[in-house]
Amino acid sequence: MKVILQILVLLLLGGILIFLFYNAFLSFAMNKDDCSVTSIPQQESRQFNNHTLNSDRQDKIPTPKENEFSSTIRTQSQNIKTEPSSTQPQAKTSLSELHLEDKPLSTEPSETTNTSHKTIYQVNKDLCIGCKLCIRYCPEGAISIKNGKAVIDTTKCTACGICSDGNNKNFSGCPVGAVFSRKL
Image (cartoon, rainbow, N blue to C red; front, side, top):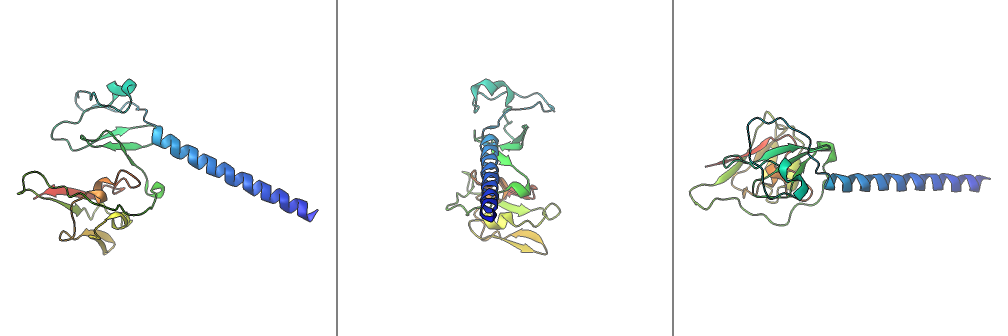
């Protein structure tokens, strides 16, 4: 009788684990594919982009202006931050949903073609919550914590933008938008 009870408990636990794994995988797959756009208030008239992820949604994705660095599109499950030169969206998720994986292997400096302009990254200390995600993903080790807030060492920073914009794989940038860039 005791053995039968143990077998039933193990089967029940196994079923629960399979159910949890299936739901986690299903929600991950749905979040990757969920690009349905809900209506967002239009602050001004915009033209629409001809290059979209799905041609049937072509009329719902706005094109950023020349001086606009990024736009945010509200979806059913998340905010997606898109760059004007990119057609792949980056998911902005809550801090608890971020996957902590390995740092990227390489960086690409974000300098303009004019060598007199250099991009530097800084942290807005009023917005920083001290979550240390930027430290984990900085490939150069240029970010540290001082007084509970992130600080970027501009001598080590290569302006790759991962701390601010993410790495397009597993990190979507600062979850509270505390890291920003400016040109010198």
